[in-house]
Image 1 (cartoon, rainbow, N blue to C red):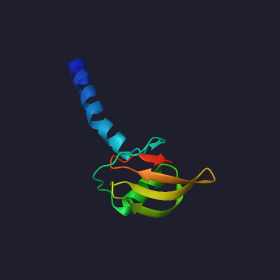
Image 2: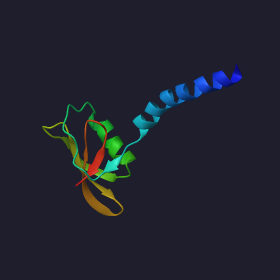
Image 3: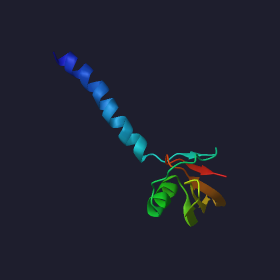
Image 4: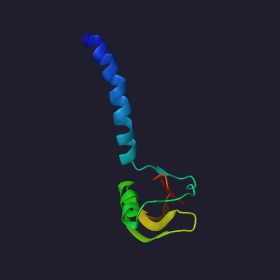
Amino acid sequence: MKTTSVLLAIPLALALGAPVALAQTATTETKAPEAGANSFTEAQAKDRIEKAGFTQVTGLRKDDQGIWRATATKGGAQVNVSLDFRGNVATQ
């Protein structure tokens, strides 16, 4: 009986825990951001970009494709960054 409970609990824990971990992770990519209906507020967009390791985020604006764009600093270099509707942070 105990073995069955443990075997059932493991997939349930993985199923419930995985979305939480993914939602809190900001990824940094070099590929182009995806256009789409972006529901992030300006404050949320800046927070996501900063959580991806960027500082001095300036000029943050949402373009006509729903992509947040800004200039930021990472590793001492100033770069253009973007945030798509999926929460992916990309550099150009």
